[in-house]
Length: 113
Image (cartoon, rainbow, N blue to C red):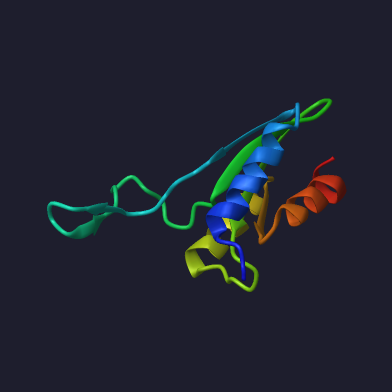
């Protein structure tokens, strides 16, 4: 059985919390169900495509911004998510789609450290 995205997010956030030079957070950006009106409500200020986890890595002479869109294994990015990550990468951030904690650890070892 494939793990739920929330389980993967939690394992990633727990690992990131143990990294001394990392400040990371979950970026909830989803509609909330309004039980009174029986509809999903999305705040006007929300930006479509924002990744699940955003953070900063302090390095010797700089701070690096990173973002992870978490999907279940085999999951795919929406157009908005793909565009958001492309824009983030274009301005110097490191944005990725990941489907496991192992993906994040590999990115930190190869790309961010």
